[in-house]
View 1 (spheres, rainbow, N blue to C red):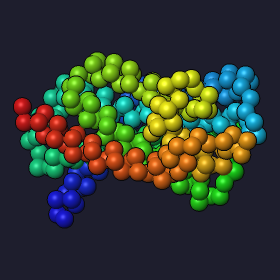
View 2: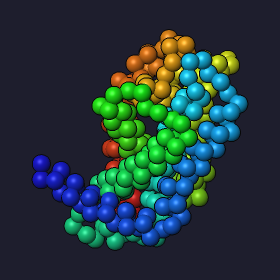
View 3: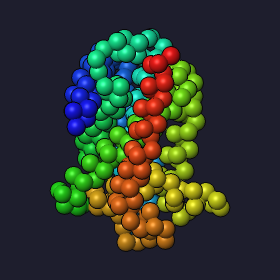
Length: 267
């Protein structure tokens, strides 16, 4: 119990340190605030005027997908920051301090949740300006936002693991970009997964990103009875499946990232 308290306290200290670093880095802060606005306006006005859906506007169908795309992209900041700290020798300084070994990773991932919260709030406000509406209860809407933030936290541990395995910012950025774009675009973020051809359809239907997007659409009330849901379990029960995915990612990648971090500071 004392070890858990120590890890939590040290993690919050590191989170404050990372939050201050982000505030002093206009490029990171600008990406957190500006990029979501660009995504919402670009996709809502460019694609929204070209695509029609039965029973609902494309803008309301699209925005939950933009939420998920942005948090997946933003979660890469965890990995990028860790690789930079590795190169600058920051971990060597942390090693000399009486702190929990997992505090650095806890602090970094928590600070990224704060950034993702800022991104989601920004996107929601801009979405309301361009016609997006929540048609569910306040409780369901709050659960939708919490589900997005939980997945973003879990996915930050994935990027932390990848970053600690690759160890350089350039390599991490290349790998993260190559992986994140297919994950997002081979989903139901922009088009109904049932309309995808051949083997792309089952890939999109079982993609955890598709599950999260469908769960957000249901909790925000951005669905239409005229658009049937594919007959696969994750998309039939997207909220439960999304929460399960977050738990699985945390269970797998928290110990992996912690082990790689301890290996990195022991060199």
